[in-house]
View 1 (cartoon, rainbow, N blue to C red):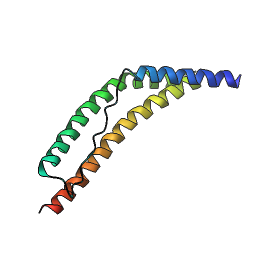
View 2 (cartoon, rainbow, N blue to C red):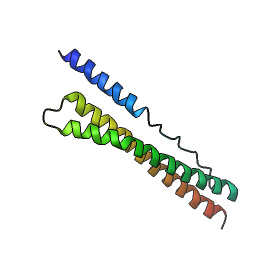
View 3 (cartoon, one colour):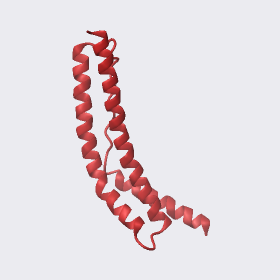
Length: 120
């Protein structure tokens, strides 16, 4: 019986991944080394970061309906472990998108400070 439960949970997570597969996470751009970058490279990095933020917002908008639906199902009375696992997986995708944006902004700001220090 436990093997059947694990198989069903795996199928649910695979189904969640398939649904989330309609939502494509954008690639995180690399930031230049602010200590050696040119002004033009820093402007390109800023444009890349802004483009990522816009694409990431669209990605999170795409994830949101599935996350809401999965969370509702997981909180319902009599929710199965499969439904709870699916909600956790959806939430992890959303949180990863938030973290990616926060990390990119932090990296850009660090390189911008390095650029400012190297080019007073």
